[in-house]
Image (cartoon, rainbow over all chains, first blue to last red; front, side, top):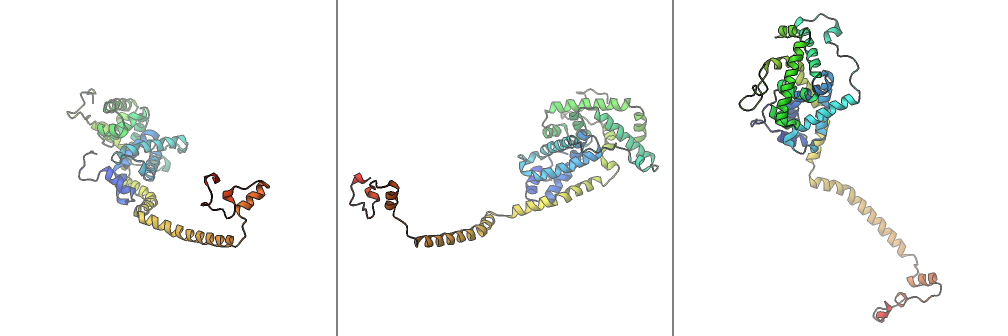
Length: 194
Length: 132
């Protein structure tokens, strides 16, 4: 997402309208940042269900505290801070689900198409590989390579120097490539998935 | 993929895309399994935000005169009742014999002379500066 989208209302405009209870404006903010919020939450909690909860909670907390967003044009960075805090609280409160994340196919016992099984296996392996990275690198690689944010946007929104973001992204990618090649069975799954 | 960190930069100083890794990471997007995932995510957030947004709309619709008027609706009747009560109490107090200050002081000072100024019927015009 580019910072220079002149045809769309800016974050600042949407925040100011949402402060007055404009449902459309708040909905636009949710739509604009739901994926990024999920990616940041996933980078902290590591599991889909918890990332979903943390991201949803973060939007509601943000709505409740919109007056505290001192720079409405920097809403994204402010929101990502809330997402990180909610995600960490989720872990701290030990409300993470106790059950191991079991692939849905295994739960139902029903036979699954090969493609779906491979996708889920790849997801599990990727999450394992991501878990080996430092949290900041997970956030950066997911925001850049999954959500398509530019490194300058990440730097601005996470409050990091641009060079640091580039460096983290480089090392995160390198580590992920290596990890995915080293995990037994991954190259074969990737070959099939592509 | 084997390009160095610097060599992977585009002229605009933006880091180049790694499409292979992007494709692999895409499986982490919940939309992979459920195309309407993000639509439902947004709907869930919005359904929980309805109340907060409604409160904000109410607060935003209130003008300064609304706030003053709402105070007035409470404060004016209360002030009127308080004034009426105070008036009744004053009227009732006026019917009771109240001893003059000099008499009270005489009783308190037990025979000591009362200052001239406080004597009943004392006139400021008749008194010199020493009375003070």
